[in-house]
Amino acid sequence: MPRINLLPWREELRQKRKKDFLTALIGAVMIGGLLAYATKLGVQAQTRAQQGRNSILQEEIALLDRQIEEILGLENQKERLLARMEIIDQLQRARPEVVHLFDELVESLPEGVHLTEIQQTGNRIELHGSAQSSTRVSALMRNVDGSEWLRNPGLDVVETIDRGPMRDAQFTIFMEQIAMDQEEEEVAMQ
Picture 1 (cartoon, rainbow, N blue to C red):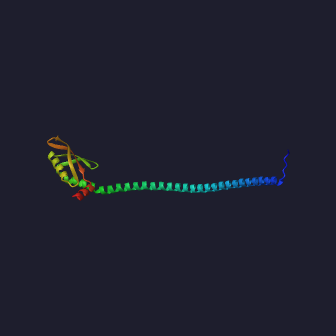
Picture 2: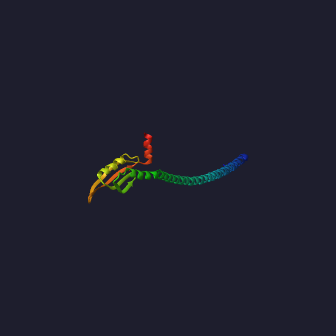
Picture 3: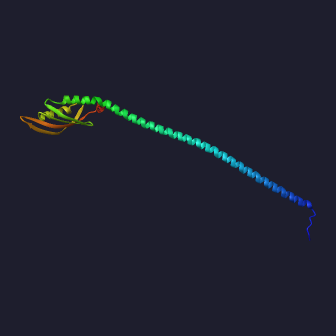
């Protein structure tokens, strides 16, 4: 038996609902697409803004790195200058030491003693010379021992050499020179 719809309004209602549903579905898909596109645009805008901030930070970091290198260069230059100043200061303080050394050597040399060579390495001084007798060499060592600028005399070699009717004592003596700053420390300790 064929079906006959006695109520056509139901079919029309069904068609209308179907049409409304499709319209709502298409509208929801379009709104969803628009929301997705707007979200994508918002995320891209935020990404560009963050990349801009990152590039500014990278430029600032590069600038700070250059400044740090300049500071390190200046610190190295400062250390070199301070080292030079210290060396110059040491040389200035050591200038009178040579005068004191030669003055002390002249005062310590007894009569009949002649120096042929003086060699200084650091604070150690080595004297080579000849004397009329080994007693005069002993007197030289005693004078050095009582000296204000020299200390710790030591005898390395004494050789007696005959020169015709005369005898000479060839000697090598070593001693230490007292630096001016050491003398100041010793005075402060007393």
